[in-house]
Amino acid sequence: FNLRLLFAMQGSGDYLADIRVVIVGQRGETVLSAVSNGPWFYAQLPPGAYTVEVSTSDQAQRQPVTIGAGQSRLNFYWH
Image (cartoon, rainbow, N blue to C red; front, top):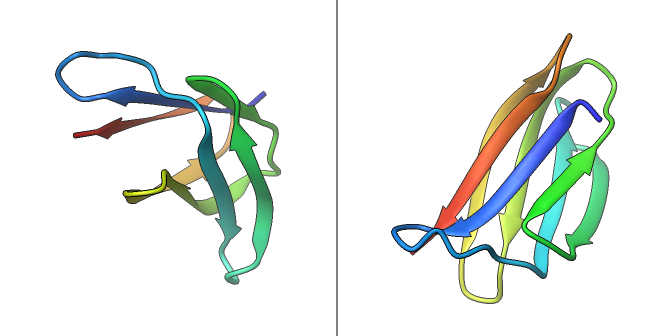
């Protein structure tokens, strides 16, 4: 897998699950839509630029990522 996401609480480091994950391509198309059952989420994507949008029932976050050679890692922390 060339993309790894991590979900945790800021400060305590407690892991989170049941996080909605949407990965959007450069043209605004949804490439992947899923719910993470655990604190780590792995995906295999073609090389390119994406926006990763993650959300719980009360908070949403997004981060850009460029997929190339090797594994890209994004960490998302909730307050």
